[in-house]
Length: 273
Image 1 (cartoon, rainbow, N blue to C red):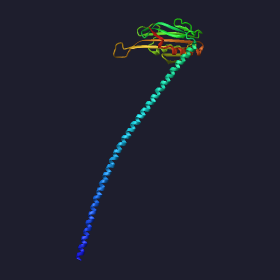
Image 2: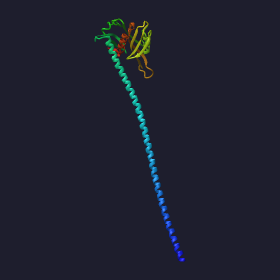
Image 3: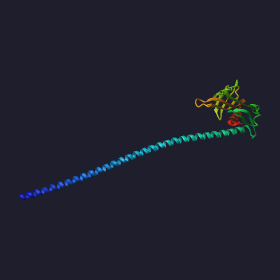
Image 4: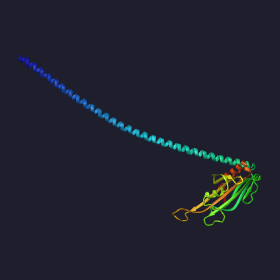
C-alpha cells in the first residue's frame, strides 16, 4: 500500500513538472509572438507615417502645380487679349490705308498731283516748310493759304499758331495746351465730333450748315531750364491745321476730303530745313 502511494506521488509530481514546463514554454512563446506583433505594428506605423508625409508632399506639389497652371491660364488669356488687340490695330491700319487709297482714287484717276507748300514757318524752334499733296484734276492751284476745288464745293485753309510764353501777339489765340487749340477751332461749330488720329480731328457744321473737317497737329515744349527740382516750365506750343469746308452738304465730297486730310496730313507733312 505504501509502495502504491509512493508511485502515485511520483506520477503526480512528474505530471505537475511536465505541465509547468509546458506552461512556461507556452508563456515564452506567447511573449515572443507578442514582441513580434509589436515590432510588426511599429514597422507598419512607421510605414504609415512615412506614407502620410509622402502623401502630404505630393498634395503640396499638386497645389503648386495647380497654382502654376492657373497662372499660365491667366497669362494665356492676357496674351490672347493682347494678340486680339494687335490684330484689331493691324486691321484698323489696313482699313485706313484702303480708305486713303480709295479717297485718292476718288479724287483723281491721274498720278499728277499739286504740292501745296507753305514756307519759312517754325516748328519746335526749327524752320520748316509745310508740304501736302492734292490730286491735280480735282483742285485749282493754291492761292496763299487757301485752296479751292475745281467744282468750288471744297475750300481748304491753312492756319498756323505759335504761342510763346514771352512773345504773345495781340488778338492772336493762345494755346497753352491742346484743349485750348481744340476749344478755339470748335468755336461757332455745332454737331461737333472730336477724335485723335496722328493729331486731333474735328468734325462739325458751321453757322450756314456747311460740313467742316479740321485736321490739326499740336506740339508743346516744357523744360526744367537747368533746375534739378520742381515742375518743368511751359515755354511754347506750335499748332498747324488744315480746315476744309464742303458746300451743299455733299457727303461724298466731304468723306473724300475728310479721309485725305485725316490720313494724309501728318507730322510727315512738316519738312524741316
